[in-house]
Image (cartoon, rainbow, N blue to C red):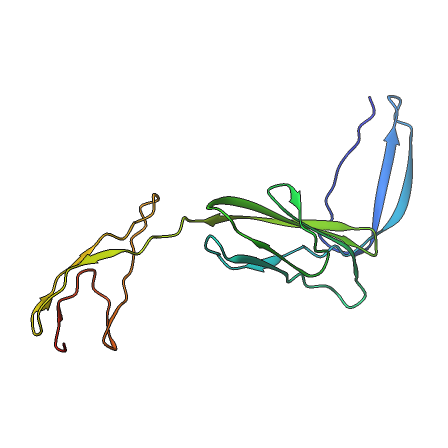
Length: 178
């Protein structure tokens, strides 16, 4: 039975590989080959979490040794190729959901590596409120009807009234000017 051993080299450079073949009578032979393990930088990229309607920016941050060059760069999102083969790519996000991003790099020395990430894009919140007209010096009664997304994320608030800002969900605002 022929055995095909596998080994993963974690160090680059010259390595010796030895094979000793032995028969049932105890006779043996050996051979040694020297191989060169080429550097294979791990592909890596960064991104920001976009909102629906934003552009998703992807940037290759792979650290390469001076002698190493990328000869082919392939970006894909959910299996679809992006047009860019540069160290950055972008795509406008049209809907919420999960996006699987893959960066595949091929190096001048014949090695290749890839990096992938799952990016979640939450649905946009919808800001809205009801308010009735009030008399001067009365308290403005605001009814917030903003939509909290289906994922249960809480909203934060920033109200702006006459140059003053409030961060409460239901601020008490005095209508001090007519």
